[in-house]
Length: 382
Ligand SMILES: Cc1cc2nc3c(=O)[nH]c(=O)nc-3n(C[C@H](O)[C@H](O)[C@H](O)COP(=O)(O)OP(=O)(O)OC[C@H]3O[C@@H](n4cnc5c(N)ncnc54)[C@H](O)[C@@H]3O)c2cc1C
Image (tube, rainbow, N blue to C red; front, side, top):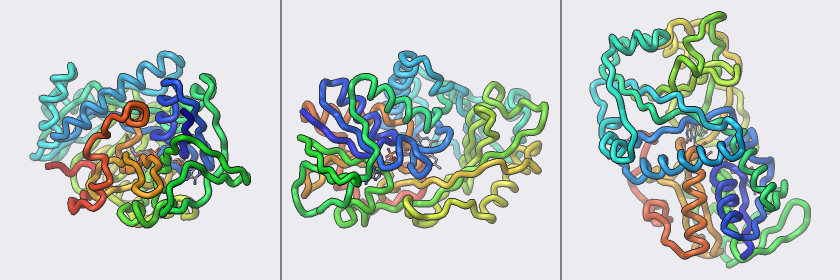
């Protein structure tokens, strides 16, 4: 069998890697490269966690992905994933975290509760004022994002996969197709085509899929840590998430890039090809006032770098994996703000669907695109 995978972000590159390792002849294509600076999989790091509210399905999927990332990085001997643990800072309502506990424990992991007094001793860089519950998830941390996409693509090529850097032209949404036309002028054909184009799915399939997707602008900041103060490095500080309004989360200083912090609040509609990626002054100020309160030593920290990325939001908050009703191609996307970690499991599920006709999990099917749920953050839960 011959398969073309368009898009070498976390979803597409893992999909190509899995198919190749199942004996398929695979060509992976990307317009700007794996984990490029426009892609949703670009940038330095992404959180990996198994706390997922009461959503047992995603807890299992995240654990499976973690195991696959671990095996992959041991084989390559490259540090892609680091376990710092994740610190959940909650007000009185800790139900999002607590409702994962049973499932997490059944998979051999745990959650640890700390009093504010204990937490202050353990993590002196954080001011826990107004925090009612502190829950530590040891089996969590971060992935080096763009480096991971590049590593998957390199290993894919080493194992015999073909990678092309080219743009796939527009698709006629009304006709079955088994070929794509490249910006280089060539047309290539395969038995199956997978479009794992992240936010660009909106432009490629505007009628059938695009009109249900919201591509939101998301800003990420890297603040400089004080000299001779190691409270904010990955050795001393876990990944952390504060489930307040708005939700803030962050990743300790990694690879000397500064303290990463972001707001998990959807920004305005964004075009990933052409829109400007300059940070917004009022959001930087909002983040600074949060730092003042929660990480006082960083109150005056200089903003070293910023990134503007984009979420591909589906109304239900679920990922997408289904066959296009007219073209017959596979569509993979809808990673919202939590898809990066799931690449390995997504690739595995798609390979099973393509090669063994295994039904894809129900939440990923297109019928949920018309869902009236309209989740506003990835942490909304039943
Ligand atoms: C700010 C931010 C923070 C996030 N935090 C986390 C986190 O902590 N943990 C987590 O797990 N997830 C997180 N996510 C979500 C995660 O990053 C995304 O869900 C995931 O990266 C989506 O990957 P993808 O492969 O679907 O899309 P992408 O990475 O966007 O890949 C799509 C690829 O397709 C290519 N492409 C598009 N159109 C064409 C074409 N016509 N021809 C050829 N190539 C094409 C693009 O160049 C691109 O490389 C975050 C996302 C953002 C934006």
